[in-house]
Image (cartoon, rainbow, N blue to C red; front, side, top):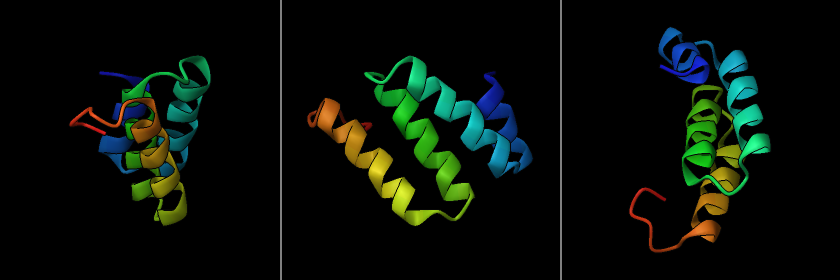
Length: 67
């Protein structure tokens, strides 16, 4: 389990966003990192950021079914 996943499971949106933001910063080419951050933003009720992260994932690979 990742740190961000643990925060998501506990419902801790603030720390989940922080953890997954670090993941995106370290691996900006990772679709999973962007989608995990989108899930954290969803928990935080930040819809604009959810859309932004999903669009970033799609931009990396628009044929990826997860994106």
